[in-house]
Image (cartoon, rainbow, N blue to C red; front, side):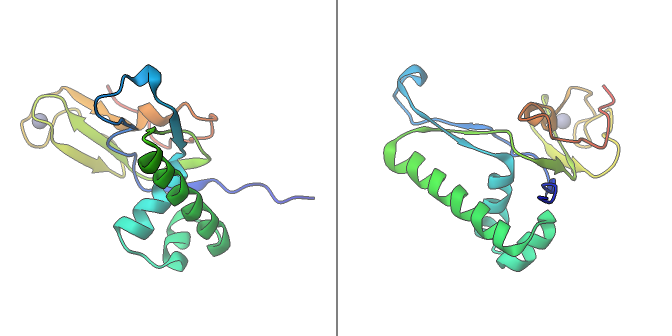
Length: 150
Ligand SMILES: [Zn+2]
């Protein structure tokens, strides 16, 4: 019997889900699909600089699993840059631990572990966009713990 696959913990959604080479129409580009859990592995190891052991713990996975994940992520990003492909982030077995909210009025990004506020903490406008919702497609495994209030 195989053990059930663990849902990977991802701190918060990427602020941008698509990266495209300049000057080439999107229809002519090949796309590299980076999963949200691969993105998180890259963020923890290469952006935050965590050891694999600590990063694996944050994501709730084993160290060998983390190492495989970060290797896949690096390979994909490298092929995107070297081969001039679009890089698209989405999908994967994960759960967000925070909401990432962008204010459409002033551009402020804020993240919340609990309930998302109705108004922007900076400008007090109520035109907030919850970035988590862009990543909820995937394989339908994103178990968002909190509802969006708007
Ligand atoms: Zn604002």
